[in-house]
Amino acid sequence: MTNKQRMLEGKIYDPSDEELLSLRAKAHRLCQEYNRLTDEQGEQRKAILKEMGVNAPESVYLQGPIYFDYGCFITIGERSYANFNLTILDTCPVHIGNDVFIGTGVSIVTPLHPLRYQQRNIYRRKDGVMTDDEYGKPITIEDNCWIASNVTIAGGVVIGEGSVIGAGSVVTRSIPPHSLAVGNPCRVIRAITEKDSLPEELLK
Image 1 (tube, rainbow, N blue to C red):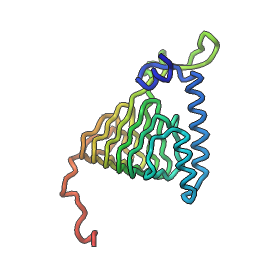
Image 2 (image 1 turned 90 degrees about the vertical axis):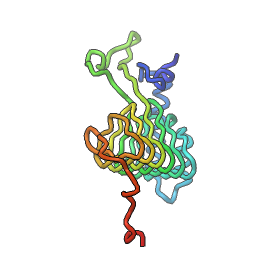
Image 3 (image 1 turned 30 degrees about the vertical axis):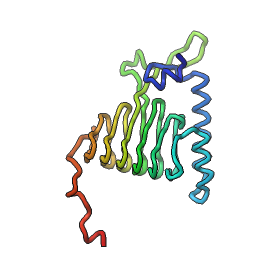
Image 4 (image 1 turned 60 degrees about the vertical axis):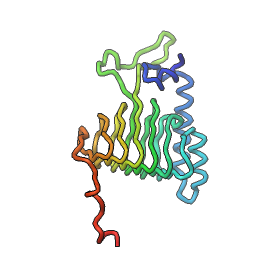
């Protein structure tokens, strides 16, 4: 099993692997290119996402700047949108559904490190290369979610369809569908229901 396969399956892997180093270098370079472009250069932006391997349809809009670790392990659904400063560390697959709104400064981070420093610290391999042991867990954001500004979503989390995550929340556990959840650690406050519809006077 290659280190790339181990990484995607959530097993301990060596991040100094040459294939992974090459993929990260490519993604980081392409993110810099994307971030230099403007809204008027939308076709070039889409071409960069395609070159990076991001699985996203034409209707996706990422305001930029964006910061992706690999990009090729990210899937984004139809009509989804992200505001400034989206960070996705996709050492494991990241799935973002259809019609997802993502606010400014959101971080979606799949990597994990051992809690004990004896297993976490950098060490020298037999061939002299410095490395460490890492692993990760995938993240899924289902359809019709709103992730408000400055939210951090940790590895292993599933955010259920139609949920709203309040600004500044740190999501370390999965959130059920149609929930309003806020805080650090993020907790469900209540269900989202028809009573949350905007009043008629705002719609006129």
